[in-house]
Length: 94
Image (cartoon, rainbow, N blue to C red; front, side):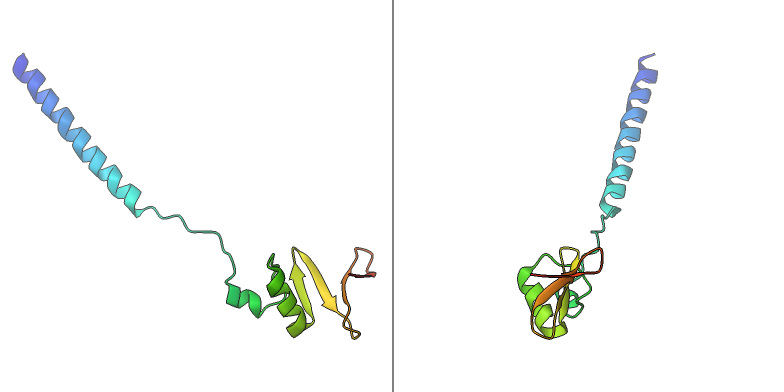
């Protein structure tokens, strides 16, 4: 009777050992990919990508005469005034 209990005990220990080793390998293989955030270089050369960086926004306004800042597209007029278009299509000067 004690031999059967000893054998069951060792089998149980071996199963736990192999199960934990297998799960440890699965955890190491799992990688979490970060969400896509455009690189600063890509943002610098594309005024249609929205940014929260005020200095980058001003740079793009100077270079491209338009820039998206916090989801709103701003433009530079021929008189060098900055404006955006309202929902009705009217120019709103800043």
